[in-house]
Image (cartoon, rainbow, N blue to C red; front, side, top):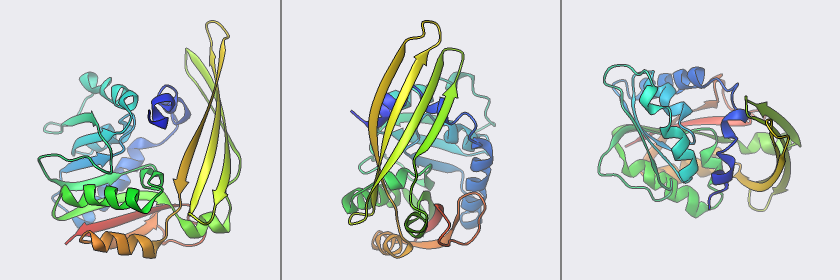
Length: 256
């Protein structure tokens, strides 16, 4: 079972204030900067599909895959009522970013909201990069964001608290980090309390999200070995150059 099989039930509550439309516009701009005619995207680690629908509203057609069947069920739910531009199509399916294969290529591959940092081993990273490059047309763009190593080491991860609710649930999460510098990995222990408003019943869940912080030279080498070159690296959303304060880095690589 994927960690996100449990996480799916309350995932969108924690991120209901996330600016998906603005983020999709940022992604679309970067993709079109390096592939002006791009109109198809494969999204690796699509979660509940919020980025995919926002990118479809930017005019792209999306195929999204996620390791969690529960995430995919939630991604599919709003498709019937989604209002998308003429010609834009969206589909979702269960698949592993490291091994998923399709009988088609795409103009771009996107992996958003730190999915690449969930690839904690070299084999995980290499597998996901192979998935991306094997599905890109020549000149296609691979865009992803991740935890950026210099910032993680400069301003260490801290305990964080997050809340969310809807008409049925009230949720509260404490995230406690444990660093493993020998592996460039942070284990984030999530403890979650979920309250059913109708009954007052409270469920407590505990799960670990292992996150790898990444560095430019290692990504440059791994992408080059798969036939891609980094064309841009910047802070997520702002587009500023990377530095030791950049926790969320965006990389744009092009297939040669």
